[in-house]
Length: 243
Image (cartoon, rainbow, N blue to C red; front, side):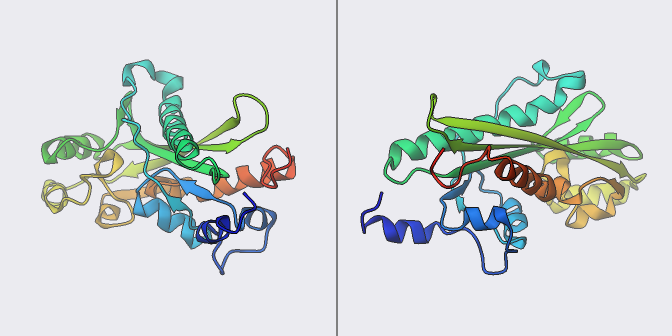
């Protein structure tokens, strides 16, 4: 990996932007190959806002884990397991494609809305979107994002998966039918977990947020960087290639 041909590759993967804070996390990430296993522009924007712009390689994992296996207190494992599968799929694919330039860190996330006992992901169509929002009108729900990172280690199996889950409680307004129908017709919520985008016109539906707002948008920036800081401080995450 010390050949001259690897230099432009490393430069292309420098994910730390000029406005990033000078902290141990960003210092260690500089000139590392950091990959986001998601095509979500919202996650790219959230990470970039604090100075991290990873290479984007969307996962090919089907995200088809059976929801019936994740109920009650175990519901948080659904986005965690999905994120883990997404991160591993991308990590293993990139190692096979480019063994001379493997990723130093792969990040994946999965956001769901939990209402009662039901896991809500993206609505199937506008009818499903209307049902979701009508059900939640006047009630509260929980946004959960599972985050997984995969990084190489020297011993078997050659990589380590670490995860976290962040929860944010949302209180929906008593949504007037006219507003509800107009929002669904706009199509904004069709590719969003729970059928709404809180950072857009969906803010007209939600009257209270308890917890991390960014988590509802799609990525818990604070918790993610807190995890990285702790792992680096405790020498559990090696970004120097020595352990």
